[in-house]
Image: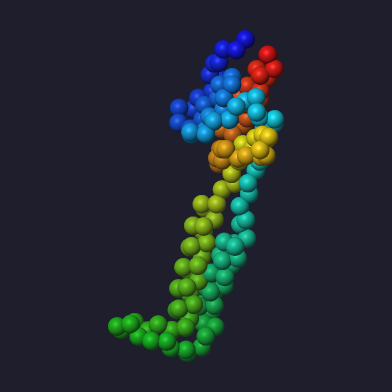
Length: 146
């Protein structure tokens, strides 16, 4: 039974047939895939968290007037003191770190093992999407036995 049929097609990037796994324009023969698995790619959240703590510390230092009567400069009629500068920079750091934390998402990758080694053809933040592709690939690998 050598006829090829489509098992999965997301309409954009991925197509899996009984013989070929296609991601964008890259083709992998199903018979050349030894194994398929999922890998979780975690992002380190320590740098933005430390930046958030530094920002909060700067805000607190500005609010409790840690720097006594240190005047930096005037901008028009507005006095920029070390305390105001500390609070402003702290607020900026805190907001940037919150933005950074909001864009950090764990990712999931499809890992296939071929004769050339491990390859990572698909990466997504959606675990269900990656699980579905892995399931269909395993089904396609079962067809190669026939």
